[in-house]
Every structure is written in C-alpha cells, then in structure tokens.
Length: 109
Image (cartoon, rainbow, N blue to C red):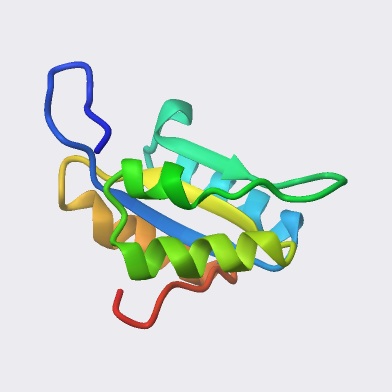
C-alpha cells in the first residue's frame, strides 16, 4: 500500500478510458474540483507493448480482482487515470468526474 507524507494509507480510484482525450478531460475536471496534480496519475502507452501493471496496482492497495481488470484493459490499449482520494469524502467526487468523462470502473465499485 502507498502512504502519504504524514504516514496515512492512501485510497485510490481508477478510471479506464478508451482514448487519451477523454482521460485528459477527466484530469482537467479533477483539477478544477480541487484535486492537485500530485493526486492524479494518467497512465498510458504511446507505442509498443504495455508493461504489466498488476504488481504496481496491488502495491497501491488495489484489490486483486480490480488490479487484474485494470491491467487487462491497459494491456489492450486503455488509458488509466488514478486519483488519490484522501480525505475519504473526495472518493465520491472523483468517481463522479471519472464517470462523467467516459471512464469505466470495475462492477464492484
């Protein structure tokens, strides 16, 4: 699990996007809603084979079934937008914005 500067565990929300322009729109909306640049990661591959992200995702504290879903989407060309959502009330805001901009999430989220 990743930790913040003050040793609190981080909570992540990750959206899967089919193309980079929608992902970039989600990032802009997250910034406009008060999320800082260092709370947001946009992960994609411009060319070549996508690396396996499953261990990285598991290390972030993402449940195994979600990590497998995200990794599979990423390997098939999806762009991932991950958002650090501490304090916890920011989770709902991040989920709403990711969905509004075309992001998909695992069915359990």
